[in-house]
Length: 112
Image (tube, rainbow, N blue to C red; front, top):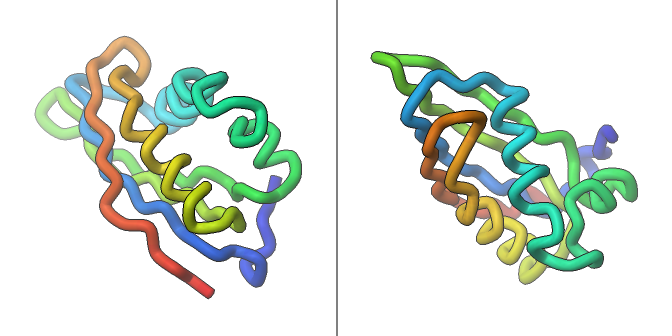
């Protein structure tokens, strides 16, 4: 689901490191798979995307020396508290594909 930039309130910026080579679909799959059911029905990521309250997950990831690192951008039109809860859920992800991973929220930017 595409999100209208004029309705975006916050941009969650996340840094990711993985102990192996991972690709964009691995990262997106981990985000949906490991946050599913974690926050209840009200903050289910799939439902939020369907209702356009969360935009497209953008992943920039590069392999280097047998490891991967990069950034994830997640636009939301949720309120600040819900956005912070969603960002915290992203930090709970510990595996991407077959690799151990560490995800840290860099910032939650107010883009209005």
